[in-house]
Image (cartoon, rainbow over all chains, first blue to last red; front, top):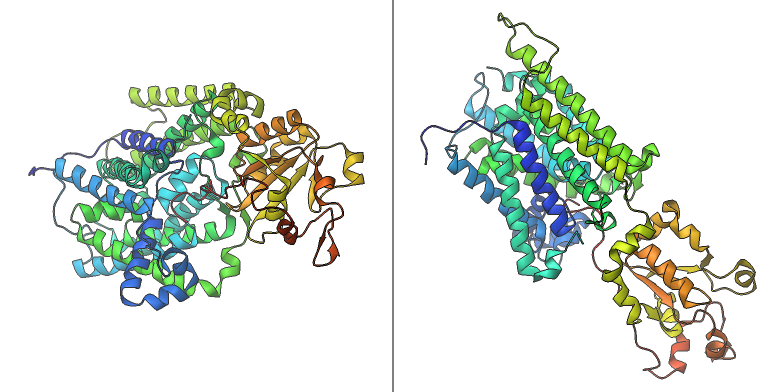
Length: 173
Length: 398
C-alpha cells in the first residue's frame, strides 16, 4: 500500500476507458452497465432473510425473489461484485485505500454520515423510480440514444443544480 | 457478429465470470477518475470541478460511436442491443429525485460502491441508504403505480423523436458533447483562477484536447456517412447466422401448431398474411393482418413486432415459400425474435379442418378451437415454436 496517493487520471481519459468498458459490456452481453438493479436485488435478498412473506406479497419484490426465486442469481449482481472488486483494486494500486470520511470542512463526521445515509436513501428511491441510475440509464441508455435515458440524465443534473445552493454547507471548505 | 451472449456461449457460470470482469473494468474506470471521493462528485454541482460531466459524456460518446460505427460496417447487430425502455415522466421525476440524492449524499449507486470498496465510511453509509431507498420504493409503489407505468414507449431513440437518421443524431450528440466540454473547461478555468492574475481567455490551449475532439468529430462524421444497414444489406451480412433455421425448416410450423398457439392465452400471437388483398378478403384467419412485403421494410411497421414481449410470436402466411422466406429474413434482421412461417400457407387449411366438429359444433375455419387438436394423432406434427430468449430492452437496471 502506497503512502502517498497517486493523482487521479484526466477525466477525459477515464471517460474513454469507461466508454470502452461500456462498449465491451454491450458487445459481450447485449446490455450495458448498471448498479441500481443489483442493489434492488440485494435489498430483496436481505428482506427475504428476515421477512420472506413480505417479499412474496409486494409486487415489486416478488418479481425478483418470491418463493423459489433467488434474487441474487442474476448477472447484474456479478457485475456489481466486479465493480466493487475493481474499485478496491484500483484504490489499492493508487494508494487511495484508506479508512476515512470525505466531507466539507464545515460539518462534523456524524453529520456527514447522516446526510450520506439520507442522500443514499433518496438516491435508491429515485433510481427505482427512474428504472435505473447514472450507470444504467444515463451511461448505458445514453450510449444507445434512448430518449428516456437522455431526459433522465438532464433531470439528474437539473435536480442537483437546483438544490446545490441550499446544501452548500455540506461541501463548503 | 456482435453482440455475443456470453451466458449462452459459456454457460451460466462463464457468463457470470464475464459480467464480473466487466464490472472490474467499470470499478477501475470510476476509481481512476477519482469518483470514489464524494467531494469531487459534489464539486460538479458547484461548477468548480466538472469531472463528472467530462467523464460521463466522454464515456457515452465513445461507447455510442463504437456501437454505431460497428453497426454501420456490419460487425454488430443493433437490433440485438438492449435499449432502455422509455417511461418519460417517471424517468424525469426519478432523475430529479436522484439529483437531490446526489448532492445531499455525494455519490450515485455505482460510485458509492467504489467508495465503499476504498474503505470510505461515507460511501458505505450512502450504499446502505440506497438499499433502504430501494425497499421504501417497493413498499410505496402501489400508491402511484399508474403514474410509474405511464408515458411508455419501448425502444424509443432520440433519432426516432427527432425524425433524423441515426448517423445524423450521433453526429449532433457528439457536437453537443464538444460544446459542453468547451463550456466545462471555461467554467472551471473561471473558478480556478478567480482572484488571481490569470487572464481568462476563450481559447482552448491544450493541444491533446483539440486533437481528441477532432478525432471524435471525425469518427462521428464517418458514422453519419456510412449510415446504418437497411434490412437487405443486413441480411447479406447475417445470412450465415440465420439461414440454417430456414434450410432445416426449423421455423416452419404445421397448421395444428398454429391452432394450438392461437388458442393459448399466454401467448401474444401476431399473424401477418402476405397474400393479395382479394384472397385475404375472401378468407383469412381471425386476428390476422394483411401486409405487403414492402411494408416489412418500414421501420414504423416493424417496430411493434420487434418490441413484442418474450411471449409474443409472429407467424407469416403466404401463398409460396419464396415470399414468406423473404419476409422472414426482413423481419429477422430487424430484431423480431419469435418468428415462424405457416408451412404451405393456407393451402392445406380446408382439407385439415373443413367439416370437422368439436363438442358437436362445426369448427370455425377462421378460428379453429383448441379442441380440434384432439381429432388428430398426437404425433401429427412436430412442435417448432420455442417461446423465449431475452427481451432486448431494459438491460440490467429494471
